[in-house]
Image 1: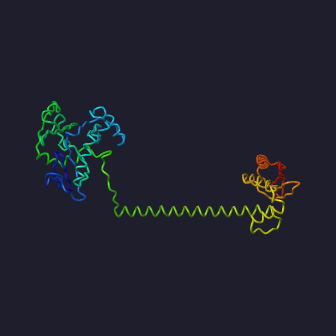
Image 2 (image 1 turned 120 degrees about the horizontal axis):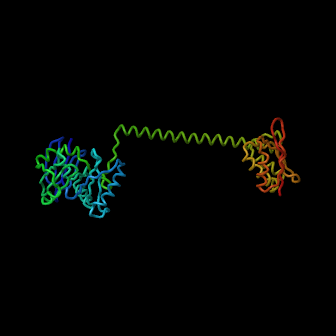
Length: 361
């Protein structure tokens, strides 16, 4: 496994190459890496403030929101200018919280991008030091013009004059660059925080391997098949509904036309019948329309026969098996603005029917 550590200390920085656990190359500036190699940017601890905070078990977004509230209390800069990152919890529920200037973060990424690098992680330098076995001790590395310290829930880089104040009464275990480099692989495996979060998170390129491609193709094919089947089902239902409507129209035509008339064009035949009965004016049509509208709203009621004279008005025989069909028909016709009389239900060859007379008001 090849990993490149790009140290952003000073104007040009320097780099180390790790092959598995060993440093195999080093150089000034920023490295030129091959596709697929892991790049870890190591940023100065002097530009990152690290705190350990106790947070309950929360979803990542909730934990970050809680950390931002805590950061507002400890940051000397306006929180809008501060990038807040939250790390993994230790055994007692304490998490590292890193604070860095947003402009500085953007500058680091711009510097790396100019060298063709998009780091997988961004790690503060002091977190790459080994944590001493004793909780009251601190590992101290003096390098690159600063002291770098790491202890239990403690990590910082500072001017040498400030180090005693920050360490307090903890005992010091001194380190050097050789020990630092020898422990990098172990430190990278346990580093508890990555600054590439929130607006600075790495955008992952979506790559589809052959197996994923087959799964996606099968899923799309299944979705297309379901879509086609759905359309066919809709067409089938519409066809059935159209056939049913044509049958209902033919049945209504039989009720209007003289007995024995062959039905081949229901609409035209009914129109001709209406004209012969005086329906060219508003007399018949003004009475038939409300009756048919009322019957359409009563699925249990069906038209059996229909007659019309200008003197008596519209007479209809309606099969009305429902107990309240007659009353509903009368109420519907009255609401439509015509005068209607609905007779009492009577039996007609085993079918409950009512006589309906409709006149204009």
